[in-house]
Image (tube, rainbow, N blue to C red; front, side, top):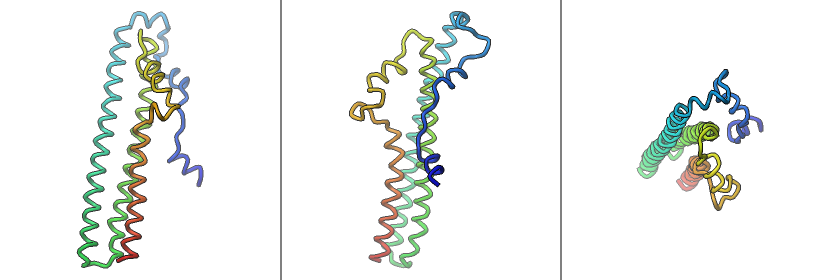
Length: 180
């Protein structure tokens, strides 16, 4: 059971050397890269744009799930306030809210994992460029993620928002059943 929990809720680091060995095309040696500086720069630009688009899709997903949760919560509250139905009927909106928050959690986690891999590849592409704004400079400026006063990844906060809401929904349901 602990293995399953760590597998789905835990974080693992990506072995950078394994990624590096898979990044460069076989048969193209170090001298050959000098002939392709424009190609590497173009691939870098495209890849950075793809990473940015994933972040934008993640923001849209957050807005979607927040709106969906709000609508479901509002409908459940309207049912409860109308007092036409027994309180136990609130199990249906609760179940729907819990499914939504679980889907939201794993979607944000998936976006986080995808962007983590993309930024590692971006850093490796920067190794072949004259500057390394992300891989070395920005990461160094952010304390390499070791100091939460300098950098706290947004996806960590985003990922725990649905969990927090799920706990609040269960608490609200218990209060509604006990007082209703």
